[in-house]
Structures are given as C-alpha cells and as structure tokens.
Length: 157
Image 1 (cartoon, rainbow, N blue to C red):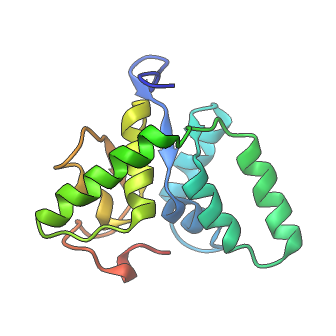
Image 2 (image 1 turned 90 degrees about the vertical axis):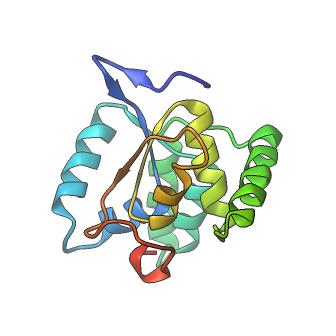
C-alpha cells in the first residue's frame, strides 16, 4: 500500500481519523465535513486502519449500531498496521516526547499509517497538526480554530 495515495488527477486518497467519523455520525453540525467525506467515500477514496476502526466501534451505542459501523469499515480499503508501523510509531512517540509533546499512541499509529501509505489524513484533532513537523504527513484539519495545543476537548472524541 505504500505510496499509493494518489488517485485521479492530483487528488489524494485519504485516511479519516476517528474524530472525523464521530463528527460525521453526529446528527447536527459539521456539514462541510459530512459532504466532503460522503463524496470521497462514494468515490472510493477513503481508507481506514484498525486503530480508527477500533476506536469507532468501541463507541457504538448498541449492537445494531456496532453491526452497521462494522459493515461500513469492512467496505473500506484497509491500511495495514503491521510491526513496522508499530516500531515507527514508538520511535515517533519517543522523538516527539523529547521535543516536549505527549501524543496518544492511537494518534501516533494513525499518523504513521497514513504517512507510510501516502494518504492524506483528515481529522478534527490538534495532535495531528503537531505531528506534521515530525514526519512526512499531509493533513486536512476540520477544526474550527487553528491547532494550538493538545487539548482533548478540541478532538471531538
């Protein structure tokens, strides 16, 4: 999967972070995100990975929702999170911690998986904007305010 992030004429395929899916499934708000994600899912441009999938599934409100979410994610191309991604994520976490940042392991895995696959990472989590300074990562932030830190309330999760 590495390096296959280009699709069509200059349009990158993407990995949608958990925060994007949470906003997508909320009944109100985030209309730009919802329309953009819907179009990209329909176009076959959206990938997932197990850290995102697991975070979303854990939050399902009941068994029916869990089943619907599971079916959705099974239909999306999967970015593998293998031992190499785990090792690179640990090393990334070590480097950013030495730079004074504390980034949760799921975010490190998601960012590293997107970077390794050459996918744009869509998010509503300021952690990813901090990580762009530490690895080759293309992001699209749907945060309503510029990333300024690592506040949990900004993630929408």
